[in-house]
Structures are given as structure tokens and as C-alpha cells.
Amino acid sequence: MSHKQKLACLGGGNGMPRAVLDGLKNKDVEIAAICAMLDSGGSSGRLREDYGILSPGDIRRAFVALANTSPVIEELFDYRFQAGELRGHNFANLFITALKLTTNDHEKAFETINQLLNISHKVLPVTLDNSEVCAVLENGRVIEGETNIDIPKHNGRLKIKKVFLKPKARAYPKAMNAIYESDKIIIGPGDLFSTLAQILLTEGISGAIRRSAGKSIYVCNLMTKHGETNGFTVLDFTKKMEELLGGEFDKVIYNTNFPDSKRIEEYKKSHEELLEMVNPGDELDPEKYIGADVLTDSGGIIHDPEKLSEVIINI
Image (cartoon, rainbow, N blue to C red):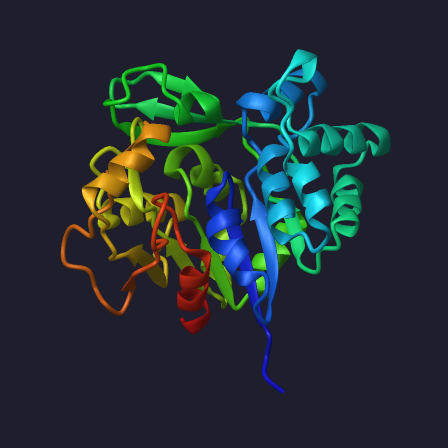
């Protein structure tokens, strides 16, 4: 009997759920989605401030991506209110908040959602500690909060020299166990400093990835981003991620399909923060760096989950 691959998928935002989970969930694998928890903007940020809870936004996207229920329920969990006092709030964010407040137990709240959405994989928070991700700019200024790094109100041309968590956050034990038990640990794609850094800075996570017998795989972004990765090549992304990891990734997946400029410009109209396609840069070791067409064939400049999942499975 063939061994079912165990995959730990680390990330947040739309990157990991859409690019990685969507493609892998129907394969013959066991997934543990380990989610960033320090979103400080939008609906999640408001709920964190009002109720002192962990951010529900990133983990909600993973729940929806792995849901095995009716489209109506999935649409409900993705619904965002457009008017009145609830304007901007996502239904699932409110639901997760209400569950946490009634059970007074994050773990129980997440288990309930797992059952409700009939999820056959694991969805886990990277931490249950309340913290903020902070960035030190090249001029020495410190930017606090995920949303202020994500959408810079400072001069976005200034480089980020260092990131840290304030206060420190400890890894959720079940997330650590999932990493140790995995055959492959996949991190990314996602915003380097506002999303992925907070995961690798959570105490215990980087050490668990380095010590795990599973292969560590970094999925590089398709485009650079204003205020975070201006002018970055694949090698630049990898070096920064490896600084945070405190070691090297076994494999790095990067895109080799460059669409025409018209398609890129069309996508940038709704994503002004994205600057240009990520180029490989210097000579890349083919033993470590896997170049592949992982881009959708048309529409937005986003990873094709089917193409990406095939690359991951075949490593």
C-alpha cells in the first residue's frame, strides 16, 4: 500500500489557500494548513481591537479553501457585508469571533468550524499568542502592525532591514507536531514581511522546520510588492526567507512563465501594490531551485493551483 504524503502548508492571506490548498486538497494527501494569526487590518483588525481575539482572517481563508460542503455554505463563509455598521466585516470572521466568545476556547472554536465545513484535513493556527509583527526600515524607523507593513503609509521605497514580533509569540504545539510529522513542509506564496515572516518568527516554528525529516519547500511569489520586495529576484526572496528560517530550504519553486505586458498591466489596475514579475536573477542551482510554469493561462497574475500542486507532489 502506498504511503499517503503528509503535507504541512504554512502561510496566510490569499496566497497559500488559493495557490497551494486549492490544488492539493483533492489529491491523495493529508494536509495540515498552518495559518498566520496576526492580521491587523480590515475586518480582522477591527475584531481584534474590539474583542481582544486572535485574527480570524487568515485561518478563515484556509477553512474555506479546504471546505467539503455545499457551495452555499462556502459562499456564506466568504460573504462580506456592504452597508451599515457591519460594512466591511466578513461573515466567517464574525462567526469565528462569536464562537471564541461563547466557548472561551480558540481550539474548540476551530474544531467546531472544521466539523461544520466537513473538512478532512487539519487547519491550525501557528500561535494562540496575541502579538504584532514589526519592521525596522533602513532609516531606523520601526513600523508596527501587519497592515502598516502590508499597505505602507511611510516611504515604500525604503528597504526593510529586519522584522520581529512584539511581544514574542510561541508556536501552537499541534502546529509544531504537524511540521515534525510531515513528509513535505511548504511555505508561501505570500507577502514576505507582513505574512510569511510572522510565521517563521513564531518561537519554535523555524527550529521545527529545520529539524523535521520532511523536505522544506519555499514557493516564491510571482510579482514584487511595493514597500516589501521592491526589485527582488528569486534569489533575493530566498535569501530573506532563509535568514528568517535560520537555515536553507531543500527546494524553491519559482515561475518561468512570463505573460505579455498587457496582461500584467491589466492585473496591476486592481493590485497597484504589485510592481513587476519576479526574475530568477543570478545563476540558480537546479538541484535546489525548480523553475516551472506555475502561472494561470489567462486572467490575473496568480499561481495555477493544479500546476503548482503537480510540482509539489512530484518533488
